Image (cartoon, rainbow, N blue to C red):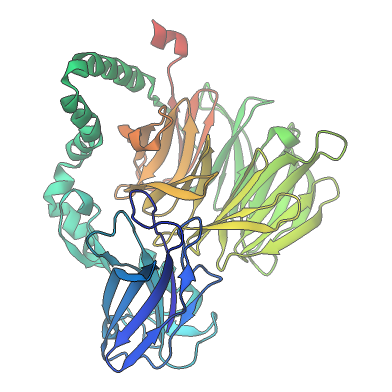
Length: 535
């Protein structure tokens, strides 16, 4: 039995300095207690480097697990979890997160435990295991993504659970449930109302300021709605799903790529396709243009052409080719950053991530790999480099923070329950988007601040607005107002509709939101000029 845990939120908690914690396994005669450990400054216990093991667990019996606190000789059971191990969906082993129930009087703590049950010796991460729900054979390291993303028989709740729907059933029945779900029919009004509840409650408490606050809020909201981009036009030409989109500031062109290996350039003011060329023999999985390398366009490919190619941004001629992940690992994302001291040591770095779970830095002039590192357990899907910050997101449901020069991993943020497909920064906030949620982290403190359920990748931020696709209708684009410094006040103000299938990429360019989709089109959404809003 393996146990990991985290998530003790110190706010309003009675947990103080000097408190120690202990994990207790109780299964009748089989009783085990972990050593007492002091709670750290971040109120954490059992991180990846501190794991508790307990042997001889009987999977036929219920297992009781307690989180205990000790302070000045007094021991309290802060939280508990009772598990029926026979319901775990893997024959050989099972590892997943569980939220513990908190005993009354323990304050605002939110402990979770990651429980690994091994029926036999601890297996290798690459061992093949069988899902007893759907019968699919997957490597052990892919079990969590399989359950959280794709297993058709894994029980999932309704996406409207947080507003009252009690349905929970197999993932394959999810769509049928939504067709008759009363909360789905009222979703727009429900979430619009829910997002305003906190503000309404504050107004009721202070009636003397109600009128002034309401009028100010109404004026602010009318401005936000007026600033939301509206549909401009459709760019057609791709014969396969669109995979990436970006803009070239120096030439004013929009660039898009597809899964057939083609890259197309466009002028936004009309539907004219300027150029089209075959960049890779397989899918073009990512594009990059940056001011650090303004004369180049970078493309990352997938099997059978999993390389990074450097193109002249003026005429799209091929400058050089760099080997990426190798062994048929797709190049999933590229990023660049000027990093170093303000003297001659300052350099422009190009970074890549791929399905081999590796991060690499490159010398663009020579095409040589400067450094590489591993840390994620599964393929890395996204990388962001800005202001000395280098961050990656992976299918292993984690975000990792790296030293830009040495590629040393500095910290890990767990996004348990969802893969990380896209990352952006909004001020000090790090947003990590997965397949059904967006997590907002306070980057300086590394603390999770808010989870946007029902939103998903890709992400884009511009002019105080956050754009992301909608979990249950992935062809729709949610527009969040993000002008407040406090993300708890962000809310959905509009939904952009037009794509006929899943949105795969977004970019903000020349006051225009460009969105690509598996429907093989790029749609443009133009924001009004600031002068028109003032008038």
